Length: 77
Image 1 (cartoon, rainbow, N blue to C red):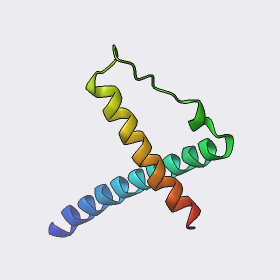
Image 2: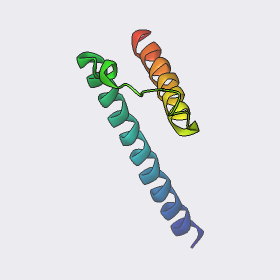
Image 3: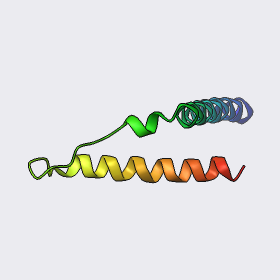
């Protein structure tokens, strides 16, 4: 009986692994498309004295860091 539980756990782990790998591939395809068409140059978040909320700053910094790392990894391939 232990063998049947192991096979179910392996099946679940395999499914999770393939799903995460698929998501990673999709993310990379989207990043390549963005890189080819330079759509990232059109994404602008306005920062003014009246718009000093924390979330736009966090979003902008996160996206910039993610894009920088992604482009660096893409270029070094």
